Image 1 (cartoon, rainbow, N blue to C red):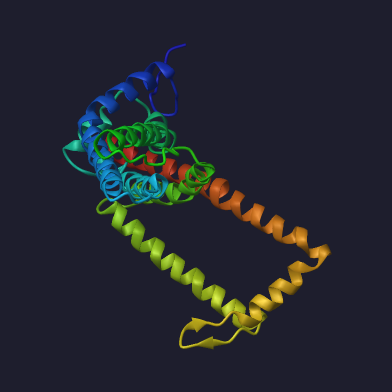
Image 2: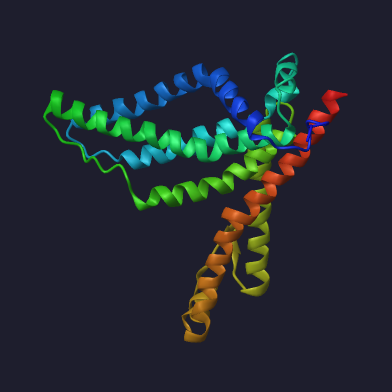
Length: 266
């Protein structure tokens, strides 16, 4: 059965070459950023080994993983707004769905796997060099349970910046960041107002005093019949932030990306 229209279809025969071509075009930029991040991690580890200071590989990895990840995600669709770069991207033999899926997988699963491989190699390189030059053994703990939690938490931020990249033509990362700050401030204001109304919590100079609110919540959830409510609230919050909200942002970005391709294809 022939394909009459490229958009609206998904083909592994097109998706495979799209992945290879995209990685090839971005390889130089990826290697430069990787070398910079790994170099900073290695340098700090060796400095700590020289002064015989315990070094937390995970803390620095978590910071770099989040910062570099959302910075990259915040501009995945920027090229489709720029001329003449968008001409090359629009001419790629792939449907909007395939381009969207590549950018989604590359900035989530691809980034997780790739950054973890680089992180692992850097950790063992730092351990070997510290022993060879300074005779000091760094703690080579490269896997922690918190890494899985870090990846899940990243999905929440990823969805937000992925969507912002599709909606903002210029400075998409910074505009998305600004909207995130404003949204967080609005939610905090709603929280303060809710505490003031429902929990009778006092507000002093814009800083909330949660003493009475905490006492109320502690007494409420400490009761055996209410303890499971708190667990369900936490579970529901995690499902919403790490699954429902990212999915909504991802598919909304797909709808917007279809509009971008349709507009420029005319």
